Image (cartoon, rainbow, N blue to C red):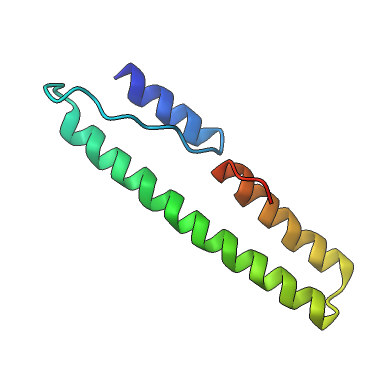
Length: 88
């Protein structure tokens, strides 16, 4: 329960936890595995969305979109990258 609580707090802070499997005989293993699968699915979705946002930013720059709009888009990119723990 301690480990799951720590992971939930990490998610609440806006980043993804580094999840390691529980012991095979742990009574929460089934729940924890479902939780880990969900976190992985969310991480993959954010990664896909990050790439889409980056592509959109390039296209928006090329189209001459206003600087304030580009800055808003860059902020979304930076937030998503931080959540994933990557540098853009």
